[in-house]
Image (cartoon, rainbow, N blue to C red):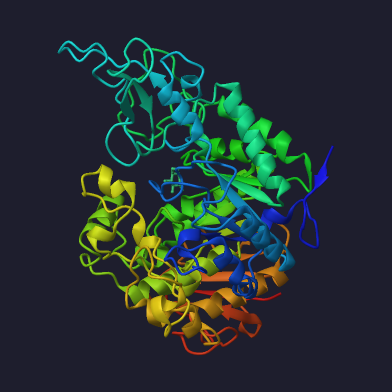
Length: 577
Ligand code: NOJ
């Protein structure tokens, strides 16, 4: 039996997601309709005109469910409701209807690896005794002897939490023979407030099917699956030591991540998603370093897509970009998935800032830069934005889906100097204030250069810097060559020029100017070098429709894009067929 979703977009197309431009909304920071300082669902509805004019195909909303916000909403109290601070289910329905009326699909986030500690199941687990069915929905274990007389005084394993500290917290028992005493430990690979669910438990599996149907029945078009690679765990005693969270081998034997058993779970999800016509789309967030294994999540029999964070982690370097694109496209083709591309999201430093830092920057130096409030090393922001724009046009020309993060269309930089007392990311607290975490890319958006709070709404939950003013949406609206206008032009052209999911490389590997052509003749050239470069022979600039360096369609000066014979430094050109 298949069900057609309420208020589906006008043109139901089972493959809409394969080459979609998907815009990520971090709801708390997008637009605040009720003036309480926190973005909300009516705020999203109110900005549907902006989203439509931007030219995206879908929005993906990070969690908007009831939550104590211990991890920005990825600590979910109730998977089938809306946080009252962000609206109501009726507001959600209104938002979906407005999106569909604008021919924009809606993707919601599902967070299956962990619930929050305020979820009714976890409350029941704390109230129940060890060994009870209530505990069996999570991972509760006895600890190890501490050698000081407490048989369970040490955590069951050395597993670390992603946000710093250990992955186990001990509870005081409230039932059973040890009531009133310290007892079992529960697993949380993220914050203490995010207990990991036990996916060996059929009740957990069934409940997530109910959640998928709940939102699918309300008309959502797809799901983004949080920590998709983490659900299946090897909890057989003795737990294996794993002091680092990296996955080191590609044989599915890691005790915590990317285990083969996880694929049964997603095969079950696909059955649910295919109950609808058109089937619901899904994309796995799976930080799996081995591309062949990552694509297992994206098989047509599972989620259909998996995020590919390879470009996000690459330097602004032609050889790297090309090698990644080549590998990911051929592997996606072999698996039947379409590739995905991402430069920024709510978990990483915005790409206009990453590219503004020295190329030798590593994760450690990025963290040090944040701790130094973005002062040292000194970022070259003009260069960072120039490169970000060039990278974006390189990526938007590729076959596959582009996932864009709110604010990148404004060329926003990371807010690296947030006052310490405003920080909210659990990373900041769990590392004893030694890592700042991800708040700098989550600062509420600037809509207006003149209104209070840059038109966001009430006093924002994270303070906005003064420089947001000249990057505000209204300051860029209609301004030729602004980043916003570049995104609008690119997304519009991308729809018009969209071609079969393949490309032909016209440059040689290692060339500083990377040049590819889609089957319909659409050409993309990026000069990754810091100096103007010779245009390859045969490039016909009369076909130039867009440059990352200046107003669309102008051949202009070298600084804007291209002259008769050269392409400007760190610039992308699009040539129409
Ligand atoms: C990935 C999400 O993108 C991130 O924001 C969150 O903290 C973790 N998963 C845990 O849910």
